[in-house]
Image (cartoon, rainbow, N blue to C red; front, side, top):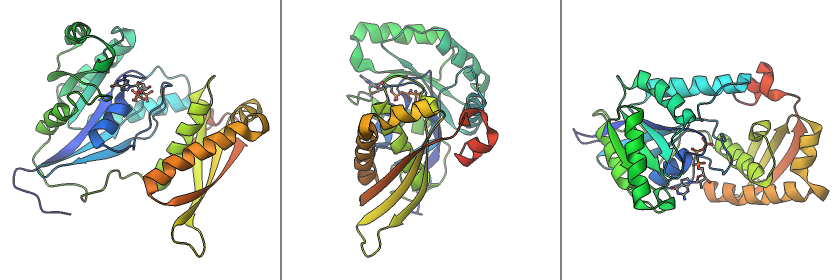
Amino acid sequence: MSSSPADHRSGFACFVGRPNAGKSTLTNALIGTKVAITSSRPQTTRHAIRGIVHRPEAQLIVVDTPGLHRPRTLLGQRLNDVVRETWAEVDVVGFCVPADQKIGPGDRFIAAELAKVARRTPVFGVVTKTDLVPAERVAQQLMALQEVMDFAELIPVSAVDGYQVTTLTDLLIGRLPVGPALYPGGELTDEPETTLVAELIREAALEGVRDELPHSIAVTVEEMVPREGRDDMLDVHAVMYVERPSQKSIVIGRAGERLKHVGSEARRQIEALLGSKIFLDLRVKVAKDWQRDPKQLRRLGF
Ligand SMILES: Nc1nc2c(ncn2[C@@H]2O[C@H](COP(=O)(O)OP(=O)(O)OP(=O)(O)O)[C@@H](O)[C@H]2O)c(=O)[nH]1
């Protein structure tokens, strides 16, 4: 661990907001590397993946939580528990509302929950995706957001064109306690590599399946080992779980085309993450109703 100046700050932040608010993309923009999972489908972030902003004067650890939502399954309940636990632990929370959508009941539901932690933890109102709308619309959204609850800061940002991403980072850092760096320099995430690899495969699989049910796919990495006799190649053995045989045929596709595409897309992402060539052995299995079965949930890492 590097030595830190006396006024060095360190601590945790997380972004909350309804599905698709842009939390993962914003986390990636802050960190500058792809660690959280983005997808155009809602509620795809499951793990509290952390990315770390390293600066000489501060270390900001971003915890990316799943979206808070009305729970219908055991998995849904666990996700909400994770969200609340995360809020209780962090130093500052960013509540994300997209600039291009009206503030609705979903946002108010989250704001009401957030108001409970706002006494102890500063909550920022963050208007995301400002690149999608004209400036007047951003201003209107800021005013509408101000009505929802008392924020410690209000700030518009765009993760896509980088607007105010650094300013937001500065403001977040300003709320961290004085303290030494908590993680060694250069480390971007403390998730085990296998979890990140599994998430990348799941993301690729979700992009491939245009119809339904992001929650019906889970991925585990069974083994990740260097290829014998080569130091530039890893063998990755992974299993994609679906809930029903019908879903299995969807993810495999006609003559295996879809699975092949998912495999090569995931391989590209994993190679970029690990900086090594990989061979991906990806199999599909049916784990009946895994979302409702505590034993299976545990095995799949929830
Ligand atoms: N134009 C634009 N699109 C964005 C921006 N940020 C995110 N998006 C898009 O909005 C969609 C949702 O973004 P995510 O970052 O996955 O949203 P999220 O809030 O993490 O979503 P969940 O994981 O479902 O809770 C994706 O298609 C992103 O590409 C932005 O600043 N500008």
